[in-house]
Image (cartoon, rainbow, N blue to C red; front, side):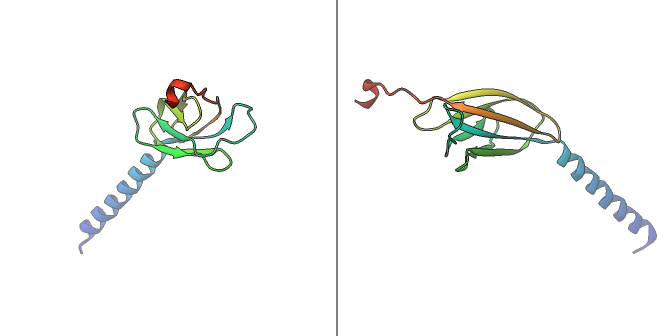
Length: 116
């Protein structure tokens, strides 16, 4: 390999590494806790989705979730679970930042007509 080829190769590798670093910083995340309406009991198995994006998460046994790799901007989080009312909140995701949220879900009222 001649000197010009080595220099070109090194510059290419450095450029690629810089682009990967920029891309990694250009996203953010949302982390939070979902509880039942009492605000203390964790809500387990809640589906957390972002309207208009494919990212989803399910709450753990402690009610926690994390959505990573989100583009910066304003998004609507949608929380759904059997037996609870669907809940939506708006969040702002910053570049390279983690936004924290806490949500309390209300128990859905069952109607007799829904059971028949």
